Length: 383
View 1 (cartoon, rainbow, N blue to C red):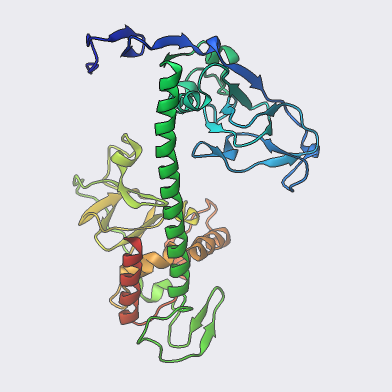
View 2: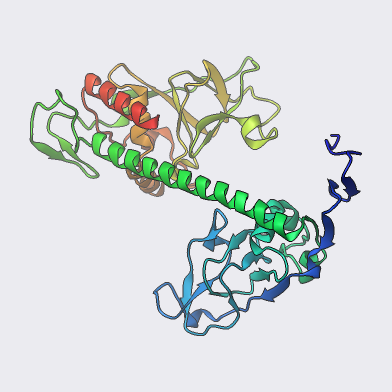
């Protein structure tokens, strides 16, 4: 694709494209210092808040910030506040965060510190170049060397412009962080609302006919609710694509439900011969029998008909259950726990939860009208 600044007055060509003439294109070694972390024996480390905060690896990073750390009573290599922390060893190679205070850092981490340049600008530059750092070196154990970082060249504006760019990006960063907090709070409220509505702890006006409660293995339900087994209101569906029709191949993700397989994975991961694949129709449920304990269960609403791998269990409900209500029940933390327990208890040696065992699971079930009202409330909570 043509660079929009190509041959534009006031621009010059570099290895990364056309940049303003007053900008430099320099290796990071021209200014930054690197501090390598050091391994600390586990006997000196604890999750209890005693000693010095210790950043062990990329699992301590989220959205470019340090979110979790263990503690050590034997601190060694320390980063400073505002240092850029780069993961240089292991599967998280290239992960980056900015230190909000001093931390002891492990040998998986390297601290980057600028002297003449804007540290904020360099931090955003590192985040922008994350993919490049992840692919600087390979081998059986991914890693980045000091030379990989120091020899890496970046377009560098004059210091006042560095500071202005960093200021603008910081403003956007704060706005994004605030939006994440709002979204997180909304998700937590919806999760709490789901848990209360789907177990009858919170009742909608006009539906309470009794104040008594009934107790089941996993539930404490209103007396006027039922708690049938899935087999009491659902049937397995095992129709195969024997005609070899060119239906869309679907996959079930943990968070998104059913998605088109090729789009989700970015490539074809399914068999060329789909004649043994199972047909699934709009309003039907499906789950990969060997992954349901992770919460991977879907309700098909995006297609009238599709096909799924033979490892899937497909089923549909009778008129006593609104599919959207049942789907909300299945997506609660309680059911991830139930699915995990049921899988472990299953006699299937491959660790699968097939229909015979799955259909024995019980479900809290109010009247059809209350199911519909609960679904409408949860739909509003989604917006």
